[in-house]
Length: 598
Image (tube, rainbow, N blue to C red; front, side, top):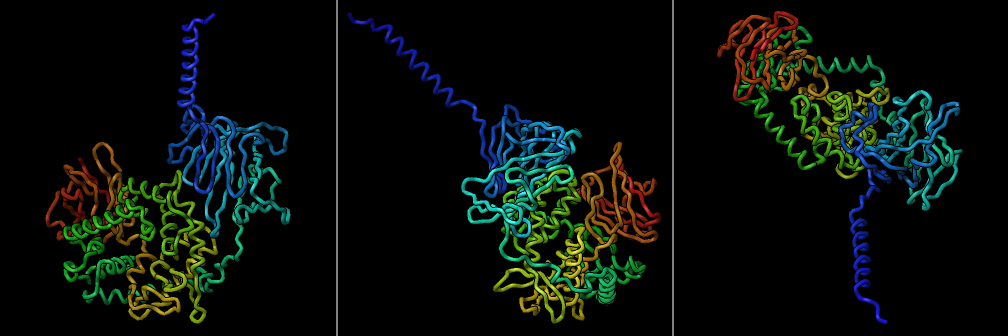
């Protein structure tokens, strides 16, 4: 008997419907597993159902300037140098005496450039960082117990070599060969477990180098080891340079803004500021010097100086913005770029600079970029002291590159850092001065002595005019182009009364020779406090001042006057087009108060 066709048709229809629903579920199912590369690390795991958003209390994590924190579901793994570090089964928190033990599991992950942060479900923060140290890639693993209760202060992290890794024991430590490269921990570990505790919260795993590293002590000259001898050499150079500047300024023919800036700054230290100012003929170089604004803090002529300053600032800001937008490595050849941007309030460009660094390979660093990376490292700490420092991972590589470029002239006993190793190698004296200054910012005697060595080495090349060769060839012979003493002073000796750009208040900066300037805005008034030697006259250009109704010096009203520079008193005018306040101050008190009333 033939079966009815309708039931069979309905059965097939239901079957096809179920298959279609299953395919749709597979197609749109939420994928939570991930594999991410962070620097030289590979990270695997499974995301949870929420983004996390830095729910932990640890300061290290909360101050990161990144928003890519995600919750995790289950274990995770970190791969580096032929080893898998397992954050799952076997990850154990315990007390130092091993009386308390508990299994741990990562609950959140934050990836910041070359660093990966895991918040564990029991509180501590586990951090994996890759960086170049001594020219070799290194993984640093550290744990932060600061947020954890006192019960658990030891963490056991299991690890296992990959199948393609070759492992051998050497001197009670383990050597891992992966893709033909040898790796090792910096201290003894168990065969399958790393132990970090509150006393030893860090361990590193790094590439072993075949060649012997250069010892910077071999390039340090004797005078650099003694601070008194070093300072005596600096004083001698300053005395000679000051005499040369005096001759140039009095004659007026070869003086420029940078030279006058150096001369006046040093004259203030020597107590001869008033006679130095009277010897300057501003008109002698007013129309020819593009850097006239540098001298304006001492000699005035502020309206002309403002035009000079504005033109210089536009050109420099445009150049920096172009280099940042092009993500050009030449950005790191510029002098103190973070300081320049921070003082002038270019916060967006600072953030953009950090993004440029994310894509920069430390191994590609050259010696002429090393100074920029180290200056950026210290300036970032100064202007953004909390949070992530994008220059941090380049610091060790910069030091390695500097050491690798060192050459010593044993005949005249000086050392310089050379670039372009091989054909055409040369030492840039300005670069060596920058390196000499920034190396002395480290809290390390060897680096400080090496910094002094570079400074004294450049000074040893000074001729009778106070100039040094701008470039020194590989055979230690100088080229014709010269680097003058005022330029050297700008890098090495800028004291508290050297004319420069200073932050002067919220959204404000000033070109000034004041020892310090600070500002506060409250109830429609801007209060500025300016320090300078009492009894002396100086000038300022304060940028970013919005239109206002009146101004006071030390609580007394003072009207604007086009003749303000000629009267024997403090005075001012305002440029609304440039939003710049031009001020002459006859310093009657150690700290003069300027009140801008809006």
